[in-house]
Image (cartoon, rainbow, N blue to C red; front, side):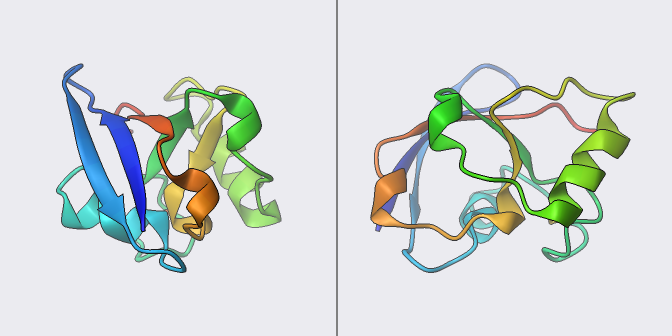
Amino acid sequence: MATLHVTKTDGETQTVEAKNGAQMMEALQAAGLVEGTCGGAASCGTCHIYFADKTAAGERTEDEGYMLEGLEDFVEIKEGSRLSCQIEVTEAHDGLKIEIAPEV
Ligand code: FES
């Protein structure tokens, strides 16, 4: 289990518990923080998050990289940008700060 410290789009913060081995998007979706419209296929961009510590963001998948490129005209893409559906939760995520990206 990893406890995520999440800053919402309205600036408020909330903690979210995410199970190890699950998609991070699922935990954020269950908390009502992201839509996850495509169900985790890296094709909608509604699960976009920013890691406060870009070194903790991990490697983007190829599809994820293309999707984030496609979003660039609509929302800021940062070094710590990830699609949370492409992240498998591990102990390494425990205690990390993330921010929900603005809706696209
Ligand atoms: S849920 Fe659609 S891109 Fe992540």
